[in-house]
Amino acid sequence: MNHLINLKPKLVMLFVATTLVFSIPTAGQSYKQKKSKRSVSVNNSSGKTTIKYSNGTNRFELEYEGDITLSDDDSDVVAISSGGYFDLRKSTFGNRRRILIESDRNGRLLKEYYVGRKQQAFTPEGKKWLSEVLIDIVRSTTISAEARVNRFYKKGGVDAVLDEIDKIDSDHVKTAYFEYTLEKDLNKVELVKVIKMSGREVSSDHYLSNILVSNQEAFLSSPETTSAYISASGSLGSDHYKTKVLNTAIKNGNINNAQLRALLEMTNDIGSDHYLSQVLLTVLKERDLDAQNTTSVIKHTKSIGSDHYKSQVLMKALSQRNISKEAYNSFIETIDDISSDHYMTQVIGKLMNNDFGDENLDRLLDVATNNVSSDHYLSSMLKKLVKNNDLTDVQLTKVLQATRSIGSDHYASSLLVAIAPKIKTESSREAYRTAAKSISSDLYYGRALKALN
Image 1: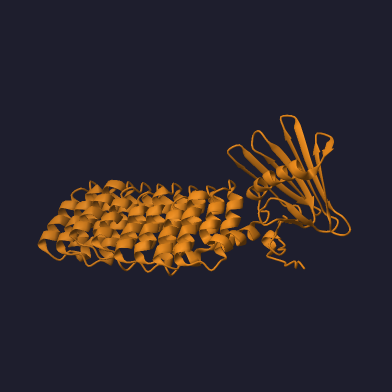
Image 2: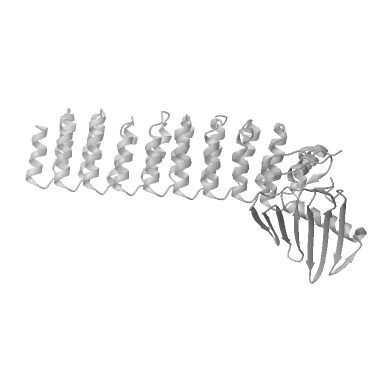
């Protein structure tokens, strides 16, 4: 006696002994898939499912209702629930064929085969044609996907399932097979095989990202599977989906610093400033970075063209504890690309809260004086530098030299007045007087000298 078992609702199926059963889309559900010259559409309405298939030369249409049970080799219909039917029609260059299968009151199948309008014996030609068409049906839709995965896995493990997936064209259908395979208790080697193949076989960013995100815990469970995961993620072309996968991976605690660096390299392919900044900000927010990864984030920020997004990432990066000399060098190279005085002042102002040596100060002042065109922003920036840092005599002299880049007598004298209390040595006093001489207004020049005395 056969027993019907209700399986998961995402692909509503029935399992009958060793036979397979069609999955039926939910009411009103439809999807289309195209690859090469193949086209498949599936629609379900009021319990009736319609499948239209075309491969360029052949077309068939299948309409069915009820629970349709297939043989375990996908070659025949072996049962239909009461009141159900299976109606298959095909046309090839004007030649039409049809198979109609219905169940009588006793559950016995009535099978009819038509060529044109003429009914012919179902066996052998009708039976043969049905067996040839059914394999295209099951490989073009999610019909019996879970049951078929179970059968292949039982016979030949993961390799058998992957061999079958290789024969499927649709990313939608491939994804269903991958997901059912990943529900098995797979070992590390098997997981790596599945991850690598999904990256190669699923061309749709939407479906591939769903596989990578929904199975992330398993995929990031070991160094081997994590490497495979990163490799598969590299197949994503869309900035949106690449960001989605990267952000979820970055937040995973199983990712080590070396693997994080590999993930960061994937950002080289993100063209959108918005998405690239999202990924880098997620790294800075979610990870306790080592010096190497902090430097890596700053270097990748250079690829951001928008001053707004670039400054967001750089400001956040300056909150990191592990900022090496190399990171500072990369930082200054990156801010050199900021054209907005507003954002440049914000970033340099934040940078001035950190310790830096004479070499970095030289480069910072060079960037500021060459890139900040506003006297207001430049003088405000230099005031903050002097106020918030205990500068050496040499550093103070360099700041005084930078004041000569300020064209406004008002802002130049205002800056010198702010610097005056810091002047302690004769060399710095001489540098101060030299800077003051660049002020042409007697009024503002006098204010600057008075502050020094």
